[in-house]
Length: 390
Ligand SMILES: *Cc1c(COP(=O)(O)O)cnc(C)c1O
Image (cartoon, rainbow, N blue to C red):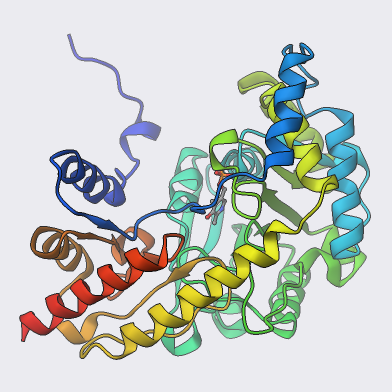
């Protein structure tokens, strides 16, 4: 019997990162001393008061279905966050809590895009965006950028790519995988073009709080009421509160889009985990003193790694301004990214993610959400590996 595989599933690209990741895990299990730069999550633990709030909710029996789009207390806390930190006024009905920021992205794309629609995605991109667009039946249109523009799409590029079929522009600042951050002026120009052309923006702001060297975050929605009406903000608890395993994300959308997403979510996943939502309330309303400590540590690692990378012949690296990634250019080594990463893992037992996974084959992604000793050891090995290629 021929087992049925739907076109929408068959057309997905299998994750390039998975092959490296599973090989690294297997090598570790064999007792080999593997240094991992692949992590897309903080190496810090979730702050204790957040765990306590979830544990208390569990002990209190807060274990049943909640409203599909999240408990009112959390939606209010999220609306308050947008008011306090971004100067944005949302009604709780415009806030949807989902099973992670990734789920929020998928809900937005599913609720706004369909066959015949084009979705504009700057590359290097977070690898799930194009696949989600394909799942929705729409067509990803990639706007390539390089380290020469710090991986930022130019206004001319955006204008030239917009067609009558353009439905959505995906903006991710600070960026995974590059760590680049658009300035408030750059955000305004891109936001103006999308408002003028009537192209909705999905602004993935999950790294909003992870900024370095005085970089500032400006939400495109906060530029004017017209921009707010043309933007869906995607966010979540995974990165700034180290809650990746909790599966808790959220979005803020114009009312009709929030309603459509509510319907999608109510018929697919229903509510995100009840007691995790109580943890989310504690994360937003409790102390934030973990963040400066984490940022100081990320900043220290980032400076070390950036300097070390630029001392390696054939490797150049623009510094990141946010998130916890560096995205060095390895084209000077003569290798493409998949080959580079496979050989690096084989020869030196260092796991990095090939840039091709993010649509950029001349680069690799290194996460500095790992301890300083690991970073020193791993980059010494990377240095030796590259010098050995000559
Ligand atoms: C981590 C991440 C998310 C959301 O992750 P979740 O674990 O699903 O909350 C969304 N966008 C980007 C760019 C990310 O790196």
